[in-house]
Image (cartoon, rainbow, N blue to C red):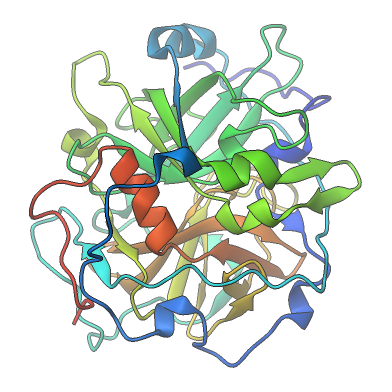
Length: 368
């Protein structure tokens, strides 16, 4: 796809933001390891069928999305600031202990293998080892036929029974300012230089799955963000097969995913776009410890900027395999911190609602 000139974001500016300014974040610190993922791992939930009234499925036209983005990939800025009620504390999502392993054929990643990438807060270039380069990528989003606004986020291919699911942030696919689903989405795994380098091609979205709590009560404006729905800022997106009729997981592999397991060291990967970054390369932050995010989940030191939103947060990252367990996605942040909701029982329910759960996919009782 040819690189086009930079376009402004006159509309939906906040919905594009990878890291929203969250002034109260620094005041919501608890002792390291107190979020739901530090709870003892549980076995598979004996819960009944998903509460479908709390979840929404949206259909998209992948052919229209592909045509929409043909030769129109660009490098948009993504400025934005916001804050939430500093006194609000969202409950942690219930831990399940369920996890699915990466698809590189090497099995589970144990907790005693020197995992993680140490402590890195400056948004260094992400190591392109093992599975990482193909399973993480950039998500291009648009809702404007006149091309006055274009949006960029980050996303991750996660292992699923259907072989076609990516995880990203809810605010990357849903307009939290005006309401409504973004209509054109294109995922480019291993994206470099605004898709001038797309080693595995591109996949258009066909279905989007959101918790209704986010859709109905996650709000934003130029002045900030508000609503308890921000505790559910994650989404699963089904991708249509590409032009060679390949499903994305079959072409590039998939990262593991976990819904509430003990998480110590964390690695956050994404494509920050606002200065001092330009969105043309994949970056990361890493932390050996973390603090509790007020909306339920994790907060780490990180200076990645808007554009990394929706990028995966991984526990038990194996540097040699370039693989780990996705336990959250980038949601909000300040100039020096980044936050993610921890995936737990509610997120698993959404994953199941998306048809992504199959026999033998998940193991229970932790990742030891």
